[in-house]
Image (cartoon, rainbow, N blue to C red; front, side):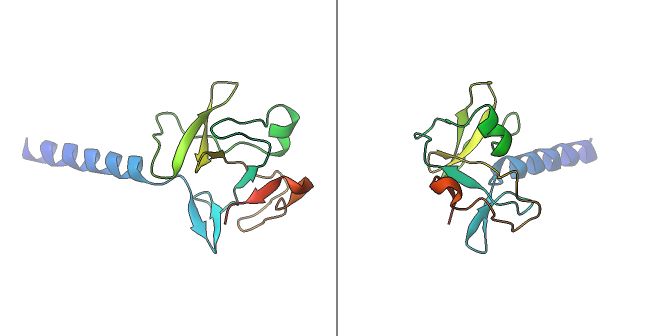
Length: 119
C-alpha cells in the first residue's frame, strides 16, 4: 500500500512537471522548440490568430501543441481553422520553416520580409 501511494505520488509529480514545461526556449538568443529547431513569426498574423493556412502552412508548418497542453507565461494557444491548437509567443503564432534541416538552422529569417525568428 505504501509503495503504491509512493508510486502514485511520483506519477502525479512527473505529470505536473511535464505540464509545467515551457513548449519552447531561448537557444543562443533565438526561440527554439525542445529539439532546437528555430521558431518563426509571420507579420500577416493578427494577435491570437493564424493567417498561414493551405500552401503557406505546408512551407511554414505551425508549431502544434500536444493535446491537453495549457498556456504558460508568455506562451498561449491559438486555435487553427482545422481545430488544432498552435503555440503562440506573446500572442504571435509560431511556425517552423520547411527549409530548416537541422537544429540551429535559421534559413527562413527575413523571408519575403514577413517571416522572423523570435529573438
